[in-house]
Amino acid sequence: ATIPPIGKSIMKLPKIFVATTLCLGAASAFGLQRPATAAVQSIRSNVPFVGRDNGPMVQPIGVDGKRLPVALNSEVTAGQSGEAMKTRGGALPVDIPLLLYFLFWYVGNYYYNITNKLALKAAGGSAGFPMTISSLQLAVGCLYGIFLWVAPDARNSPSVTLDDIVKMLPVAFCFMGAHSASVFALSAGAVSFGQIVKSAEPAFAAVLSQFVYGKKISKAKWLCLPIVIGGVILASVKELDFAWSALISACIANLFAAFKGNENKKLMETEGLKDRMGSVGNQFALTSILGFLMSIPLVLAKEGSKIGEFIELWKTTPVLSFNLIASGLWFYGYNELATMTLKKTGAVTQSVANTAKRVIVIVGVAIVLGESLDPIKLLGCAIGIGGVFLYSIIDNLLKKD
Image (cartoon, rainbow, N blue to C red):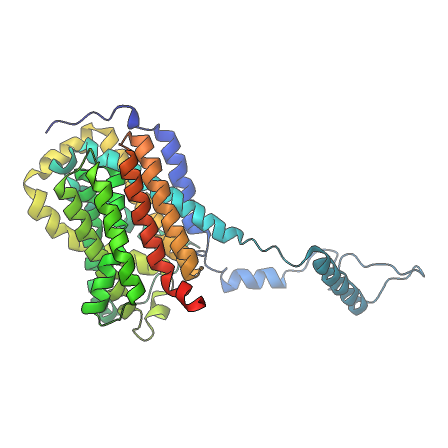
């Protein structure tokens, strides 16, 4: 298979590597560190400080030249601190870790879409190895998740049972299906177009919730769906890189993602499961491992006959091997950070964050990869994403009225 030229869209490798390191370093740094072991804590608390007799190292002196008692000193210090806090207006309202979550989530999603597209182009696009690439991206994430379990002071491993694993299978299957279909959609058409179609996921979620899971959707939300669908249609009209396979695959990805969301809610209702998993990171690692294992039969069925050709491409095309590994790390890192971010925010903030993320990815990636940004396409994008945002907050707006 001929390898299409990548051209100017290839970024310098060191920049991507540095950005990858920063993003994944953040994923391991915030909320993922284990507390120090009991032995270390015991040493810290029991080893005396030289020259200290269990009192403060510096004691204030009163007007008579004598040292103030420790208790009085504490009260004075507390009072002074309280007055200082009142003067400053209290603690800083900015949640720095949350802002970093948002930053690295956006950066991770942005660079995933770029490195994923470069890997797909290097492997021949939709006619090449999209299923193999999507599976190997999950494999890279699995290795990173396992590394965090075995690395000292990184993350406690989960203590799930076989029954827990069985209950996770539907979620993992939907996760694998959504990822594989998304990668195929992005291999068949422009990244910006695929992202516009994927923004219509709430329409699929609404239909499934109403008719499959028996969860009622308000009339106001139903009325928002034509806006979303109309925006996607308008964006498709002027899409220069339009392909039915990209549209259908992105819709299949939306369907799997909607199923995954509902199945995940059912899964987390299992008694004691959260405690046995230990953290959000462990849940995503387990889902990635199961999803990767489920993707192997799909790869063998679709591209197994030409796996030797892929291996040769891997050996001879650095653009493919580097961007595949990088995209796998980006995918794992930004998904885990997105979960952490959304757990720390409210519904409206989540809606704004997801809307802003899609706009940044669609416009930014289109500029970097040289994709079309026709005014009609941008208008359709704005209508579709605006409809998604309205869908997310419409019930809250009506409640206030």
